[in-house]
Length: 265
Image (cartoon, rainbow, N blue to C red; front, side, top):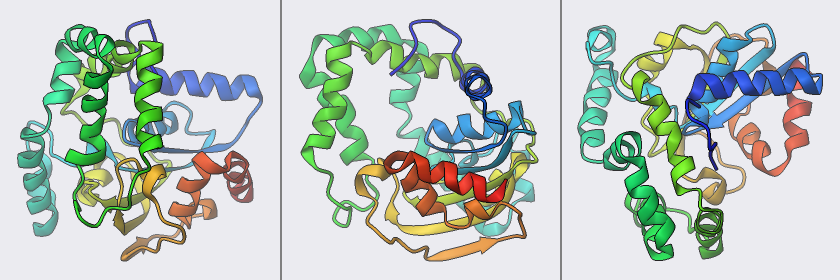
């Protein structure tokens, strides 16, 4: 849920994962992440590029909008530029939660820890208000929602879970250092990653667009989902040839991720 310590941004978490894998004895491995994990998994590749065989992400959070300088916009294709500008407008109207947690996280933490109804309303934004296909979304079982909210409520971790926003605030609006680790992206409906922006900091070897909604992917992803568009470049990382399979494996079958990584080692 979150550390009681401060300073745990994506880079520090990535360093912790690298140390954990070292202590567990893993010499080579892959990394998958979505949402904040889409920042942490690529960061892991930057921390130990000799260990990470490849990165797979969905909801690539730092590839939706241009940096404050806007330099990237001038080098994007017309379609990518239009998408990046539209994303900026979209984010302007929806970043209240992130700004609150980054700047005044204790204020919202007291309120959420004091009210299970407030905690439910805060979390329902992700299951309802952000849904890009209000009538087409795969249903989320109410037990999934209640389990998520109950975990925050019973453990009193609304504040500690928000600290990553505070810790990461200094890096918002900037691009990370370029990574040479092969990276695959699954862009689901509602995900706003722009390939031209993603390529500024990542070595993209595969990019798939899927017609299903991506937020809370593990709660909604129907079986055997196929991409509506697909592009890839030559890569030795065969384990990332089926991004949805790998993404699903990361929460349902951890051993499948290990086997997939082993195939390309």
